[in-house]
Amino acid sequence: MNDVKPYQFGRTAAQAPALLNAIDRLGDRLARQLRLILEPLCGTRPLVTAKPIDNTMFMMWDACVPAFTSLSLYRLHPVKGVVALRIDAPLISTLVDRFYGGRGNAPDLEAKEFRPTENRLIDRLSAQVMSAVTGCWKEVVPMEATLIGRETGVVQAEIAAADADVVVQSFEVNLGDRDNWTIEIIYPLEGLNSVEGVNLPRAAEEVRPVDPRWQRDLADCMDHVRLPARTVLARPNMKMTELMALKPGDVINIHIARHLPLLVGDRVFAHGTIGEQDGRAAFMIEKLA
Image (tube, helix red, strand yellow):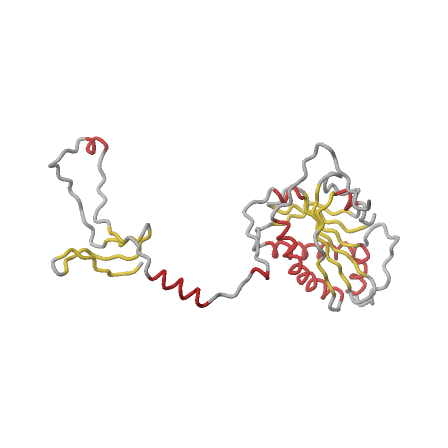
């Protein structure tokens, strides 16, 4: 039984929101953005691969995270809760070495804190990554990222409760050597559930070519649609007492404007004047709206 998962009795399983599909679909787009961000830092064309999203419990993700890592904590409005950006510490030190002309020497795996140059790179890199994240989300849900803190370990960071459900979006980064590093974005599932007004992008396989015959038939049908057109000669205003006192034979004085609107449905289609043609009342269009 290798597929055993922890379960807390009395707890209702969270429903995966529609945004999970959006996160998965935006993964490749965000991977391309990360590639452009990392290239000036490492001096080569990195390989960035988006991995399938992982809907798991926070303590399950925490158990797999190295004790020393880069954690940037954000408010990603309108997502409720903390959104975390995690970058492998060896990736940070390797990028710093390459940025200053080195070859990306083996990072110090025993390090317990970042050097000042590494902290400056974290500031720059995390800001660019979150800018790319909000840019990719723009067509789905407009988001605004606000930094609330940085930590070097999950223990010090107040991200979520141990039994909280989170959505982990991971990217595998290869700078051209044998080592692969990880960049992760951790979303609170409950926070994603609270987001409304989702406009999911269509998957590539859902996009179908337009049928020209169908277009012609639709245009032909639209040509025969009848729409009610009308104009309003006057809109007199009356007091309630005057309205209640009206009786047959009373005359209401009205003023007909020089230019009248031609209404199609509830929209003004044109402006014109009332006249006569062939012994019948007519409306002459003077200007299209």
